[in-house]
Image 1 (cartoon, rainbow over the protein chains, first blue to last red):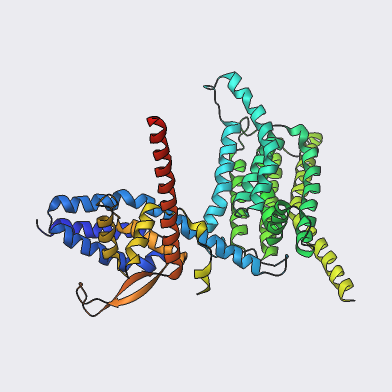
Image 2 (cartoon, rainbow over the protein chains, first blue to last red):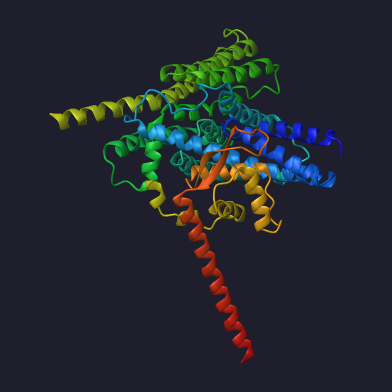
Amino acid sequence: MDTLIPAILYWLYRLSLRAFPQGFRAEFESEMLEVFDSLLVQHTGEGWRAVLRLGMRELVQLPAALVRTYRRAWRKQRTRSVFIQMMRRSPFHPLPPAPDGRFSWGQTLLETSLLIVFAALLGLTVYGHFAWIPASWRDLGTGVGGVLAGLALPVFLLGLAHRMPRWAYPAAGILIGHSLILAQPMRLLVFWVSTLIAVFFLALMAVYVHLVVQPLPRFLQAVGRSMALDWTRLSFGFYGLLPAIVIRAFDDTTRNDETLYFALALLVMGVGALAYARSRRQPQQLGALVGGVTGVLVLAVLKQLAVQGPWRTTPHRWLVEVSWLSAGWALMVALLLLPMFASLICRAWADSRRAAASG
Amino acid sequence: MTDSHEDVSDLLPLREPTFLILLSLAEGQKHGYAIIKDVAEMSRDRVTLSTGTLYEALARLLDQLLIERVEEPDEMGSHPGRPRKAYRLTLRGQRAVQAEVNRLQNLIAAAQQRLGLERQGSGD
């Protein structure tokens, strides 16, 4: 057997090693190449069947080895991240735990892509014509929406307790937005009120577990500690409500020629999320989210101006629309800022306790 | 090393390739190529490790402090004189292998006892 097949196999093997995580490669790549080279020499002496068997063995076992290696790398990274979090003394540290989108464009795209993909899917389900689906099946959507809304909060709390990554928060917002804003608009007020109560409850719990270690149940302690790590994650979660609000604001897109405004609104929303993921300070992060919401609502007002015509012709309808949009904007901004206000209040409370203790 | 005194029961049961790698290193330090050959020989070619599987396992065992890396001179290999990386069991690794052997022995003893009882039962 000539040296061509082993040479090709060696080249392919070297190429396959690029699939492993960078840290793993840095540590083991040269060794692996050396061992494979030795195996290749041994099997070449045994004939082409043996060489083929060697190649097949590497190929067949590669996916499982890759999965295990990546899983271990991810766990190590997570452990490091949790360790960094535990090292922080203050529950109101100005920076969220690294690694995240602040330092990596890949992570930034991951953090924002889920929001954008979910928003696109939401738009598709609202505007899509699914005539091929039987009517009885389509009615199931309302019931499923109700079930999802009921499950959203427990699942969200479970995710919080396990310190779910930042990009998962808007997905929870989208789910809640779809269930309570689009599917059942009558429950909107209940949603706003319950959200306000829930956020303050979480804020108090976050401070409580840091100042008084007992006697909350361990699950609630985990939720509290997770909440205390980075308040803006909750704001980002509320940002996930925006796609549902955009769809409500542009609910007559299919009847009028407003697709441009709708597309621009989604673009502004995406840019806001991207700016949030890249911002390194909390004020910048909140500014990015508020900017995104404001941009979307400004576009909605512009759309009303374009579609309804000058306000003198239909002042009543124009005022109703703009009032609705302004109220939506104010509530969204309040929701985005709420975690920050809650943290400020809790910080003041903590400071006063410390002062009382030292006095 | 303080880690070697830790309980290793949380690592059990060991997966067969992991157990064979540790067994291979039980008789002394080895480099990757020697481990692959030894594992194949011990298992009568039933377990043939790819380099990816081997080094994934070695990385995990290093993390678990069951093995450690040492450098040995490569006199016979492709780069004579250049130090080559080899692996050997730590004290914790020896404890893990011993614990796994004990576990398997207990399992086999239980199985033999049960089978023996069954044979007796069927003979009655």
